[in-house]
Amino acid sequence: MSNNTPKTLDKNTLKQVFIHNLNRIYFGKCYLNTHLDHLKSLASFTALQQAIQEFWDDIKKQIARMEQVYKLIGETPSDKNCNPIKSIVKDEFCLDEGQELPVLLDMDIMMYLQLLEHINITSCHMLIMVAGELNYTTAQQLLTECKDESIDNDELFTLITKEYISVN
Image (cartoon, rainbow, N blue to C red):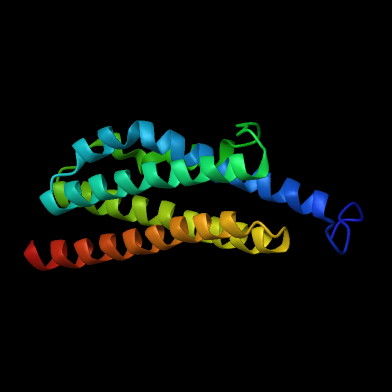
């Protein structure tokens, strides 16, 4: 641990940690929300297109919940220092490069979306813990709902991968 990092985090530092990480995941979701239509258009497998739509609907709900969290704690979202998550979203595993076989692109999309959901699950888990330390009970519940949706979406993409592999 750096000499600048206290061994025990006070409430003010915990709140900074909470806001910093909430901003990262919030702006990553907002960026993804504006680009999912394109990602959905790349999918060739109907079940994958439907899953992307369900994922997109969940992202909209998660953004709304995170906006509630900001209101509850009296903060305004700030995209300062949010590049890591946005960079992952922007990268899209070079999905626009096209593939000879549609299955390759569909599998890339599923892997990409599952990676994003794993980031969200981990981020929400950490935010839930910090919210608990800050006694943000309602925020904990809202973030738990976001995390649960991400877990469900991850499982959905796993099932679609299994279906795709057995169909093709």
